[in-house]
Image 1 (tube, rainbow, N blue to C red):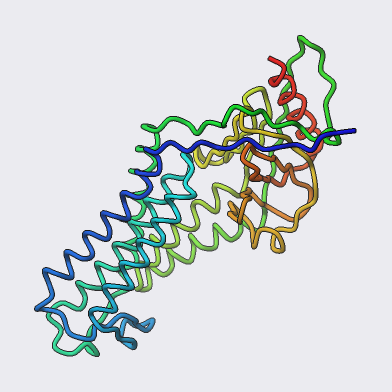
Image 2: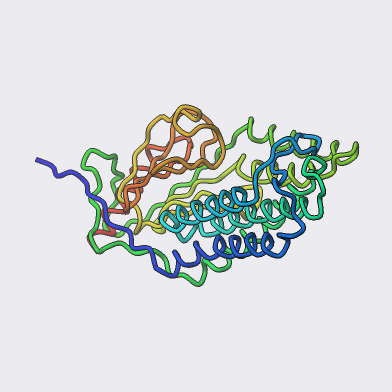
Length: 322
């Protein structure tokens, strides 16, 4: 008779939750302060939606605009505060910086407008917001170093008895490494960069930073190396120092190999985030799937995933006997 594997409870430091909430509170403060200082210079209603050419085609009253913007920032902030992990703190700061900047720029565009219908919102606002968001993301990443890693409640999850194992002697050490690539992601990244360069030459220059912000990460994830060793699972780009994703051995409850559907299960290719699961998905097919201590899953599509899973399970059990 076998017992079902159980999960450990993850303890998220209070300091981490506070740092996740901080950028959203700062964004709300800046947004409401700007609305208050410009209250006598703003039309009512305000222009809040624009066509692709920048002309106003949607309007919202001042009170509703303030309420909706504040509610959106606070709701996203609450979500990040509850769900944040140390390695994803940068995402909270990126979200707050991007959305907060867009809202503040929207207020600026409406200042001193006699008629809201005459307000224009340039496409460069998006480039500015993306730039601020990127700076905020770097700040969040730096601040994450001030927070200790999340800890489990002390219970050690069991590896599924049916999961694959790799036979290792008491004194033997082993590692596994495999590179894998995605031709569609490579082509898409290069296409975006080329389109951005052409757009910059022909006129709408703000499309260039947008293409760079999307195309460069896409290219970086188009070819990765997957490593399994006594430290856990590491997925890193072979084209750039970042991104680098690491799941420590202490946070692994078990691993398996199974086929995944890129669109059906993860909604696309690249770094994907879904409820209770994340992954580096370069194609449909064989994937190494790691079950973490809190029950979440991390998947990476890679050939020979069964060998990697077997080694991880053996290393997790060996660590549990120490």
